[in-house]
Length: 419
Image (cartoon, rainbow, N blue to C red; front, side, top):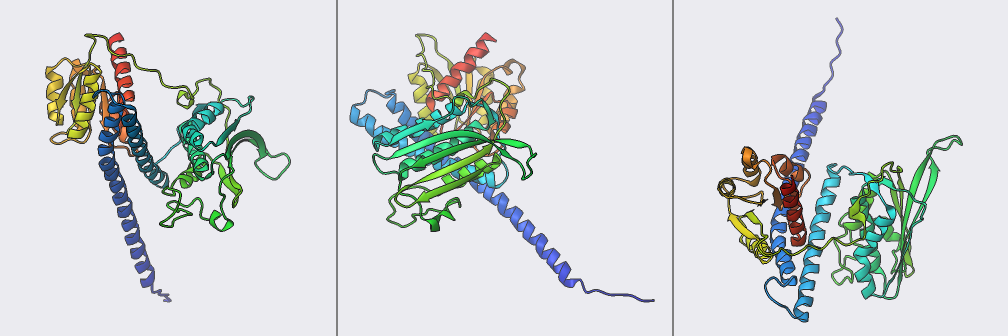
């Protein structure tokens, strides 16, 4: 009898060590997701009060303001919005790295995409007397892309161009389309490529810094006395979103001359004619003021005093009556006893959370059609879907723009009454 023995102690130890590392990585990922969710909630909740109160003051619902006061409020509003953008960038990057982002492709007008992106930076460019140029071919058809994500890409690139371009400079957004072979053989099938170039006459980037340009949290000018603000997340998001589309981003730059960022995206021509209207540069329709006696009875389920004051004051100023519930159970009780037009439901509340409250409301047959809007600081992947499954008609993540909230309330109550 012949036998061969192998000592597999080291192999078994390596397997145990690998399993332990995987468990630690899983735990670290879970803790990071929990941290991001909590951070989002804790930052968005006070931001909702800051931006909401600012919006109410600018609308002069608390009384008339002079020009200097309105200018001061505009600074507060811009600073709060900038902070919100930073929060969203951190969350977006975390979602993409975790593979939790899927593209929501739809029919997109590239001309509308370009114009709406330019609108975001036009004010800053005008202040620095920077000339903006847009070139989009008329022959370009509707394309099948994630319009919201691509606008995020263009706004990031354009905002950087404005930030790093001196006064009286020039920024251009040029779009073109070509066909490229998928392989090296002559008979290889071709694919359609959309090329977008964002170029500027800014300060430029040195060759040494180009290597780390798209790394997250990297600021090329990271000294304490640096001239330009930012977190270093914008270009990392640009690269991630473009690669999600199957494309690539490259950059050519020369110190003191300027930079040119080039996006190459494979695309499909959209068959339908349904355009993403959010990418249109047109402004949102203005809301008509409520006529005398034509008020709505609104339940606000919210436990944060600052947010209660913000939303209640604004809705009262618009002529509506607001009832308050500080717990989920109180919301269910009020919905059952009052004749309401709409419910604004926070999700994180004591006693009973908003999700359970909405489920109990929907379990009552007579309340199946009552409009419910989830107003929540939860903004992670799947939060919107959870709210809709629990019974919400619409979902708004904090901080909520009060004009948008009013528009949504009017739409829901109008469709509910007509139905």
